[in-house]
Length: 354
Ligand code: PPY
Image 1 (cartoon, rainbow, N blue to C red):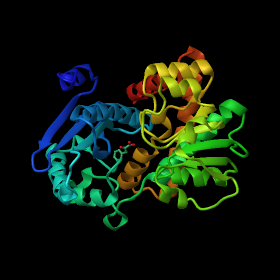
Image 2: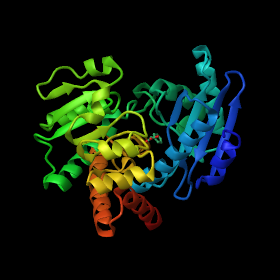
Image 3: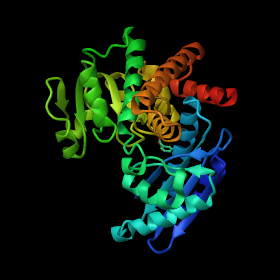
Image 4: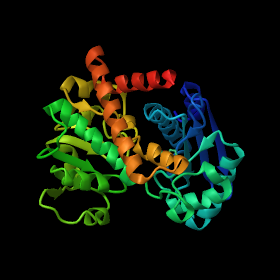
């Protein structure tokens, strides 16, 4: 079964190329998947985690890179999509982490500007500082001391919040989230600031996280309820906001989720095309992930290349998500296709238009 999986992943991918490296000192695999350089240099965060097999890491990177191409197109920015995945061995010795990152940084530098990066699952702004010492301006999301924005969670959350508003507008005729119930899965980097925004807008929020410290950090609020992780997919709500890992919308959950709409921060939420069809058939309005979560990439890159102040970037992200998502819903309604297909078409049209 497993034999030839890497080959078939390479053969069936629609992206440009993958730079791969086995890091002998640590046993880690590095895959930099460059999906498209058609609009400009390809950007995407650096994800670092343990995978069952290197091929799983390659597939994850390929899908995430394709999604980055769409994000930058929808954001109207002159970049293509990429993603780096550093696949750690199960017995990884954290003492070797900085040296591994330095070798990865050299690889990014040696690619000569075709690929730029930032933080993702498993990497931090401190890691970006270390990388930027080697790969310079190809690294975004550095700490403020190094001239970076550091954490893009809040700006990503602003875009996801705008996505929730547009979903409410489609479902109920008003952007207002006052009194609407929202279940937020994952209260970390993006989910945390999203919960705060939703509460400030008068929503009734239920949140969960595998990490209790993230839940504690939310504090107490009359309209905030904490859910056990096993309750998340069973709790009736107006809007479900997946802000943890991808693949949460599979054929089973799509058929049973007790929500009216979906707008969340996680990448690659749809486990299959069929899951999108099932949501459509049930009348559950799905706001495509790469439309509503483009704020991290758009925010970080705008702030760090154009010198925009944070509030300006936040407003630009929210405006962009609102305009794009309304257009995506209009395309889906007109063509009778899923919102995900409509968003892919929209991203494609944006990409060829500019
Ligand atoms: C993402 O949105 O998933 C990213 O990877 C964000 C990103 C992309 C490029 C540079 C910095 C951050």
